[in-house]
Amino acid sequence: MIQIKILKNKQQIRLIATGHAGFADYGQDIVCSAVSVLLDHTARGLTKANVIDDGSQYDLTADIQNVGDQRFIDSLIETLTLIAGSYPKNLTVMLERVQRVR
Image (tube, rainbow, N blue to C red; front, side, top):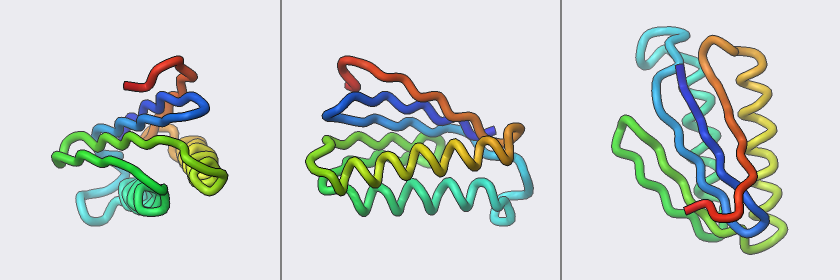
């Protein structure tokens, strides 16, 4: 199962993703593929994002600098939540509103 933890406030976001969806074999897993593409797309679209991906954990941190960043983040959270709703055995998403994300 992919587990995603999102720490967010009005100025910053941190997203930590671990695990494998287990929907299908590696390279065939549509849930893993969808999540990977979504995370990569969001990180590239944000004004300034820092990603550390060691193969077992994906860690994205970003300052929310403008309306465009906020839209990317809102869309990310909404889409991850929709995927988790469709594949609850393969993806969990936890969103925490916090004072500090780091």
